Amino acid sequence: MTEEELQKLFDPDIRRLIDVHVEEDPSAFALKYHGAVNMPVRAVAEQIACRRKAAKKLPKLVCYDLLYTTLSLEQASGEKTARYKSALDGMAGKRMLDMTGGLGIDSIFFADRFEEVVYVERDEVLATMAVHNFRELGIGNIRVISGDSVELLEASADDSFDLIYLDPARREKGRRSVALDAAQPNVVMLHDLLLQKAGKVCVKASPALEISSLHETLPSLSRVIVISVDRECKEVVLICERDKKQDISGVAVAAVCLQQGVETVVAGQEGAAERNGVTFDIGEYFYEPDPAIIKARLTDVLAQKHQMLYINPRVDYLTSDREIVSFPGRMFRVKEFLAYSPKTFRRFLKNARIAAASIQRRDFPLSPEEIRRKFRLGESDQLFLFFTRNAFLGPVCICCEKLPGRRELQGEVSRSDRF
Image (tube, rainbow, N blue to C red; front, side, top):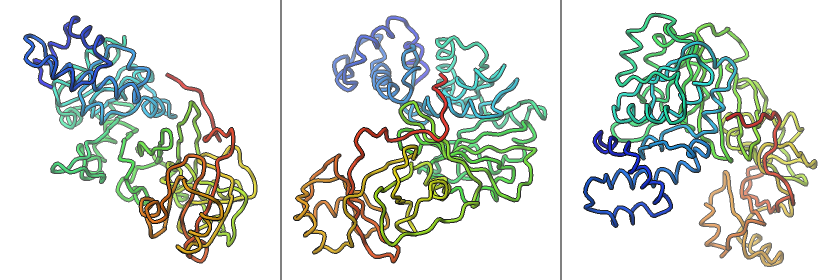
């Protein structure tokens, strides 16, 4: 979006036009009004498309007359994750710096926790848009600066901020990257400078980031928080502290699962829990932890707490004879557990009269699509076939059914929605 297009979007008549056409297909709108004089057709079509996406990502903020760009909306934190980060212990004080302002969603939520938020964004159009959005939301304690945040940081006195927040751009030479030292700003290179200017630093990293050796890259790392929303891993949040205590037990790790208004937190220490036992059989119930728990490598914490056993020593599939109502993830009743071979599996399908199922696999040679084609299976959300390996690493299939009336994710620790 250009500065000229943005200025035209500030016209109340143009914004009313967006409201009128918000349910239309953006491409059809652009075609219909192509060549219209004094109307930023492309920018209006972009707003129509963005509002649809914002309805899912920002379900409460979208009710306000905010403006977006496609890329900034795509890269922005979702409302639920931004709310959660701003409410973490210690995320409050007099002054905080958002070095990667973007659409400003994180700044919006941090504004409730700090007396002043300094939002910095290199893109002048985004910075101008942020001023508009903050005004529409009635937020008066965010100072918007258009410029280079690293230069601002270098020019700031030590301890200028209580918190510095970064969501580094994860693109290198046009390709998406997950490594911290390949992102901009480079938090690895800036590590010491950041902690001169603030006692605490919060970094939003890619959900694909490998977390096992982060303490070697970031010596001040004190907490790693993996956040999922509706069973999709969204963010890895890194908390660095200048006064980090030298704890021999390792970095604190937590998985936060946000679903259907319920917040589930599973916590532990990096590498602290020992792998629970592996069963040679299977219990009455089959469990798959939430993706955030698997990513945070905290499945062992759950297994030990609930006395559950692994089906495969290399995969986060668990089983128990007990129905664990508070289990954070998916739970099924086991109907059949069989060693897999094409011949025995085909016979099983015929005898059980199975023509359709949801197919999932971990540590299994065939993909779900290959299995579906090979055995001519349709789709079903009532019956589930999980393909993996057993304790001896032989291929197996677990046939399961949903538990009637179960709310899929319930909280070990719960807090209400705080927006």
